[in-house]
Length: 212
Image (cartoon, rainbow, N blue to C red; front, side, top):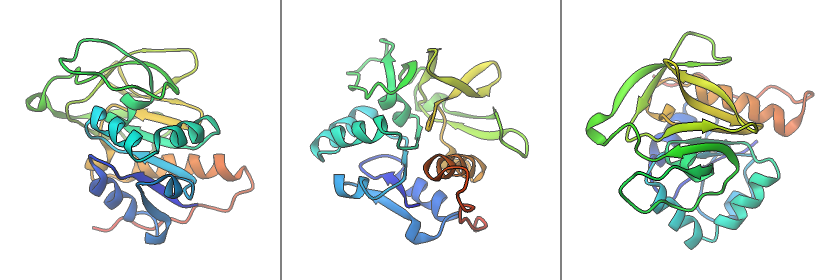
């Protein structure tokens, strides 16, 4: 299964690097066009600036294509800005123009709700189904999940606060796993995406040890 990274703006190099450490190089594709989107069986939406990414999606002719792929079950892991773009609704409050959203993840999200760049922090995150203890969450100008609707399920928490939700094959995180230096969460998503795409008879996903 070829895995894509939306490569329009944001933490694109970091996400490509994180995936390149656990997948063969020819299995990872930077996605900038509808044709490239059509070649991938799973997609990462990296952190960045959500308004800019939304504008570039439209300019690249990707907005409607991505919406169609999401409706037909494309597995997606969206982090920070990616989560904002997938949310059903944005809570007003950030001093800026909120972007349009694709509305496929049943959550209410508020942009930059943890504060500015100066309020960025790292904290342990408990992730359901993740072996090896808490995940090192990196929160940078992160959105906050204000509510989770009936069509989404929480699966990651910082203390008592929900920081990760999923709806079928669509996962959304408020933090940045690509900056953590820990491949476990990417592996967990890829395992689930592989199973969803190919069914219970699928052969094991090809991965390799993370480079040090």
